[in-house]
Image 1 (cartoon, rainbow, N blue to C red):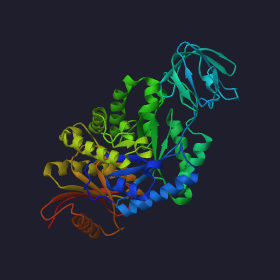
Image 2 (cartoon, one colour):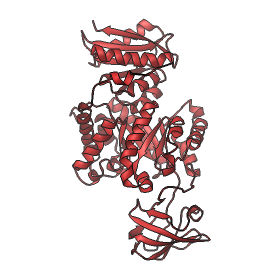
Image 3 (tube, rainbow, N blue to C red):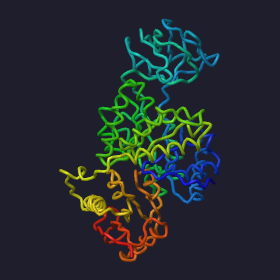
Image 4 (cartoon, helix red, strand yellow):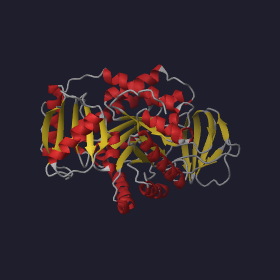
Amino acid sequence: MSTTRPPRHATKIVATLGPASSTPELLEQMIHHKVSVVRLNFSHGTAQDHINRAAMVREASRKAGREVAIMADLQGPKIRVGKFAEGKVWLEPGAKFILDGARTELGDVDAVGLDYKDLPRDVKAGDSLLLNDGLIVLTVDAVKGEAVHTTVRLGGELSNNKGINKQGGGLTAPALTAKDMEDIKTAMSFQADYVAVSFPKNATDMEMARQLCSVAAAEFGHKPGLIAKIERAEAIPKLEEILRASDGIMVARGDLAVEVGNAAVPALQKKMIRMAREMDKVVITATQMMESMISNPVPTRAEVSDVANAVLDGTDAVMLSAETASGRYPLETVQEMSRICEAAEQAEDKHLDADFSGQTYSRIDQSIAMGALFTAHHLGAKAIVALTESGSTPLWMSRHRAHIAMYALTSRLATQRKMALYRNVRPLLMDAETDRDTALERAEAHLKKRGIVQTGDIYAITCGEPMGAPGGTNMLKICRVG
């Protein structure tokens, strides 16, 4: 393992596991260098592959001495063209091309079959279809039975199973497929901490996913967090209801950019991050963040700015996809991203008081969380410590840019792992303790042992009486280390 001290930063890193990062040694190094969430992409691999990788993540995490969360990312509907006889074709601008739901033979330069059989019912003459992430654009001329007749507006190479988007959205494919339902069972068998739902259109999609997760996880006594991937145009006006039905969102900029246009995405990203934080939800910014590092050892200046801007916007996490799954430099990419996060956070505005002006809190536990932030900020406290069962108090505190290290001590392993995604929260496992004074003494001993506080330091601590009741935080104590 590398002995280089990784940067300290509040923003979490999500890394996708794949062929390039599937050795225990490399994964352990990535966790050491501040990967906090490992993403398993259910678009690839078998159920057993994911079960094996989850076991490897847990073991690498144990060896690295740091618990990480596992996020199972569902494939969602396959809105794709079929296969070609030659594997690919070249489409010339102005040429006619047919997308045929009834076609059974392999495709050619004139026509191709569809994995998504409902396309003819979702489109009409004049619609624009974007294939292969918008690199090819087709204009719909007519729909005849199961065949969508188009003219190539922007041509190029089209190969097997490339994705289809409709400009402006409007494809009716359900967010959860039969495959997703089976994959949820697989993910719950190893107690994935988060499940990311692809292409949700509304709150109903997320509520259905939660119901499926609850049924599949019931025998394990497990409750995963649900992340809605915002990648459909229809999801934007329903963003608030989707957030209410979810534990967080992912700004999935790939498909979203194809549907709403590249130029609209940066402002939407800022809006989504702001709204998630205001609603006490987590948010992940994803897609092409360090894309050039798939094949190059250093990022472009634009990628550095992209990651830094997401950090400055207040995202909980930044995500790596192919960069760590199949790229040539998975560890170097994580190290670069860590350095960017640290530098961006050092440049952040450190004024906290404005967050509290005009705010009212009706819940005791939320008021205690805000009181801890406010007091620790003004006293220059070294740390804020939350003794927590559910993780709610650290989540609320993490919605504000306190620039004070937050440590969440919990006796629940599932809570510790889930908090791995919260910005500026360092979750630690601590033995269950029913006596308040003993718990507080142990918490301080825990911090001193880890070098977090030393003699003379001030820290704030929150807990609940009676101890061990989720949602019961009702006490704030300011301590000076003796």
